[in-house]
Image (cartoon, rainbow, N blue to C red; front, side, top):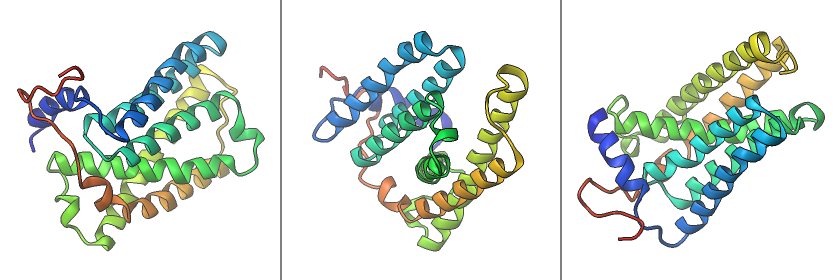
Length: 208
């Protein structure tokens, strides 16, 4: 699928009428959206930016028409990750940082691979072997983790010195990202199947 063709399906797919467990996924999305002003008023601009990233994570699975179970998992974990940062759980709860990295980056690695497959960057993930899916998803997880760690460094250096960074923390986070993404590879074929996408002109609106 070309980039233009994919972009044309995102809006109609997002606006389709929900059914079954998709209602629960939409409730999660609404709650994540409502958390934005709370983060802004209660904590400030940096925490608002983190909450906005969580909202992006909650929106993309629906735009791609992915399974409700996967959709809900990404939305919930994105929100948990954002609020864990806001409430300082990463530095006060032993091991919590690594748990979130394993689970969330595992899911995001799956999501990135599906997008890459849709764009033709990767072969259709539904046709790859489990071993290939694990390797590809592991690489995707490392890529996501690397970008995140660089973002943390930029935030610590130029925006807020209280953002925790350090060599041991960064290497540990990347290792957790890799482990989670490798595990996520085993879920890739399941997550990429049984999708509910809508083409432009199919009248997919919430009210239609």
